[in-house]
Image 1 (cartoon, rainbow, N blue to C red):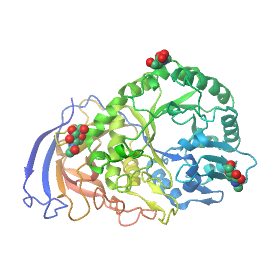
Image 2: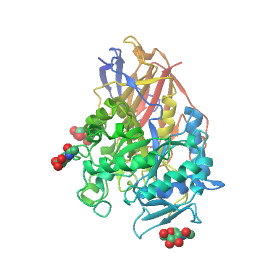
Image 3: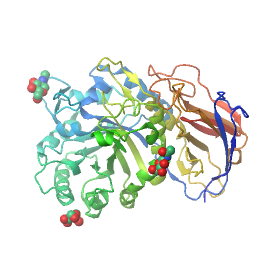
Length: 504
Ligand SMILES: *[C@@H]1O[C@H](CO)[C@@H](O)[C@H](O)[C@H]1NC(C)=O
Ligand SMILES: *[C@@H]1O[C@H](CO)[C@@H](O)[C@H](O)[C@H]1NC(C)=O
Ligand SMILES: *[C@@H]1O[C@H](CO)[C@@H](O)[C@H](O)[C@H]1NC(C)=O
């Protein structure tokens, strides 16, 4: 039983003027009605999280006594709203090329090979932990990625010993041993390399690492799609008992990118309209149901521990757009309804799926992308003591609608907030498609007196110009007058806008 749309009526252009009444807009009206709500489930307040490629961590956070001021304020904005900034996992391929070096002079020293944006060797000294301690908001936490691929347990042992010595314990949520171990090639692990070997080695290594720390481990970081992974899966790792054998498992994680530009065939399939397709998103993520269930049945949170729109570092004009921000919101909200506890969006200085570029690079200045606004939106939406979520199915496939409750709702409870994502593509260039504006009547759920906090921008393809509650964050800090709109039971949402609707 859920809240469903009961009427959908199309009104010709110009007949009704919504708040965004461009003369060439098309307006629909959708009415939400109360139908019971017995499948709301908890949504983690820290579901919106970040993953930073290990070799770029000092670009993002700066060096000793020189914090990156843009990153610091962008993280602080979220702490100011939500009480804590997004958790940051420091990892990726380059965690598996990293090692602690007590005598090295540099905080972080990357060695790059031509044409490769991921360092092939990374050394760091104790200064890195000073950066992680000092250059972030007070409630910052990290998942710290350790090197498993080099196949020498002495490397992660030295990393853990250094972290235990120099990193403030409150900064560390967990360690993670290895990035995408299911994809290790013969130079990283002798064959055969299958789930059995992985579980046996993890158990042995984590015994040694665990004896150095009171902190736990995030297990998995698997890359392969569930439809292809066979038994190299979280489900099999749980079945083989690894989470219960080690001291102790904090989370289980998979990684994914729904699109890829790693080869020409897949690159030709990348499109912003494809990314913004809610039906496709729901279908794509349905393959994780057994992975999530295995984790949650074992009482362990499931994380999408590294993720983004397009693998091999994103696509300009797709991954860094307002449309991608809408996709991130739909991903997090839908993921929560499936039982995902954290979605860790990956970042690196030259990567287009980064929410911001922290330093000038290749002639481009430090930049805040519209995707950052998904963090602001989630922090604001989830400001409840005990948030629960349910999706509200609607026939209009360009809409994704979610109800948020405070606590597990009784069957008669009305939502605290309604989130409406209009996934309709609306290109900011004047020759693009007509703006489709949908009016959603929420009065049966929230009454007539509603207030609206809006994420907007010039269009789906916009890589700048986004606003949240009327303010932009181009400089890191909010700029412009904060706007919370008021309306009488009906909210108009243009393609590529998202709103938080609540009573006032
Ligand atoms: C950085 O690492 C490379 C490769 O390991 C090494 O040759 C170089 O000396 C290091 N640079 C510094 C300043 O430590
Ligand atoms: C996983 O699948 C492979 C290939 O089918 C098989 O050889 C292996 O025994 C399986 N491992 C487990 C733990 O079931
Ligand atoms: C959205 O994705 C679904 C499922 O893959 C597909 O059937 C549908 O045609 C797509 N919609 C558009 C507008 O491309």
